[in-house]
Length: 307
Ligand SMILES: C[S@@+](CC[C@H](N)C(=O)[O-])C[C@H]1O[C@@H](n2cnc3c(N)ncnc32)[C@H](O)[C@@H]1O
Image 1 (cartoon, rainbow, N blue to C red):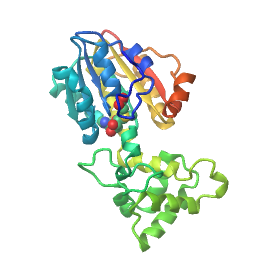
Image 2: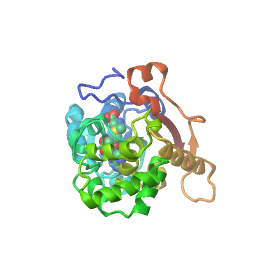
Image 3: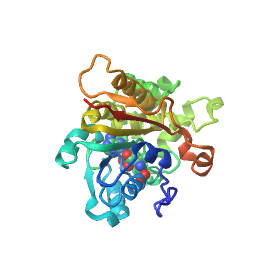
């Protein structure tokens, strides 16, 4: 198996070897890739669990699922792709007839397809409509959120979800600007942030934190992780494995805390987990060099204990 291949999609799966090591897919097993994306990790799970392993692949982005379905077509009926949020993992797996699973992987954040498509509005590097929805079939866009939200709420979003120290200034500028002209594009928002953030902060693009904050808020990304972590232990078979890859500190903090609680059994009924990663696993120098996106990746893994 070629563990570094992106099979022409341009998306290189992060920490692939490490994720497969913890998940240990085997023939006859049932696995869930709760963020199937472009199918990179999923293809490796299916190859490693050949000939009899099955996979339920979940993504809230219908465009990603179309690409994954092309990439995973060769595995035929061993794969079932579901358009859903991983926050409702239990319902999704129950409907798919996949409970309990032998392993579940979550690779958080955005795929390169989402980041690099200007029309998705995720990146300040490309001009496009300020959309930022992972699931474009529902919910408000970032432009709509910016038209609706009050200044105090906007400030908290920028501060709490973007760790932006100039949250108040940016929020005030957005609210003032929208009175004159709607903030409808990524370039307009990036230019506004650049105008109000002091120039000494410009080692990193000044819009980075604001874009992160709006994307997390709009897609309720932290709520999704909380709901997933509440339900997934009960979806694992005893001995089944959970592997989580996160890309920013807010996500990793939630994952770390919740896995520790599940491992210690603190005040909770329900399945217990055993941590497989005492310390967080990060990408090797070689992977960081080849794939800059891997530099912020953090992997944690756990195993369900017998009841
Ligand atoms: C980093 S990409 C996954 C890439 C994938 N591992 C691969 O190798 O191609 C993350 C994917 O998770 C999806 N996603 C993010 N939050 C989600 C959620 N709450 N429910 C379902 N999918 C989600 C995104 O739409 C995106 O396609």
